[in-house]
Image 1 (tube, rainbow, N blue to C red):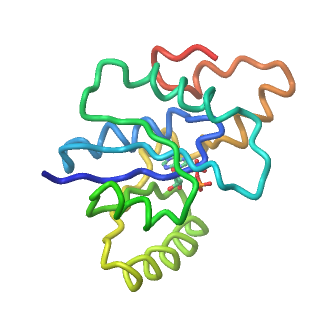
Image 2 (cartoon, rainbow, N blue to C red):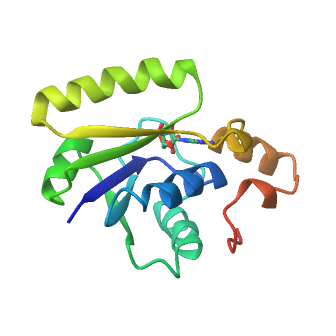
Length: 150
Ligand code: ADP
């Protein structure tokens, strides 16, 4: 059984995140979307709202689980008996950051990080853009996964 965790702040979960998880289901038997609550930045959406949005997106997908965590990501991966950490890459700056973290995680625990490149149509989508659009009262439905209402 190949299990991965997909950790992030998901503030909120976007169509970019959704696309990464959907595509990863051809690689993994189970994907745990792990919503981090130990963030230094104050989130706009509560942990319950963030989990609810993800739940709406994957209500028909039994192989996707949603959990919250409040510890080091690798410790959470070990606790869940996951052998892989899934991440998405949009840009060179994502790459530099992700590579450093992945190296550290591998050194600490042996857990491999699997990175998928963003689907190019979503390369500009980020939680930050969605939060900005909300602040100015704009329609964000194109930035959210299908079947999600905020
Ligand atoms: P974090 O705060 O841990 O970076 P995010 O919620 O911002 O959490 O992102 C979680 C993961 O999703 C990261 O690997 C990020 O690079 C990836 N990601 C975010 N937006 C996109 C997108 N549009 N396409 C592909 N991957 C993305």
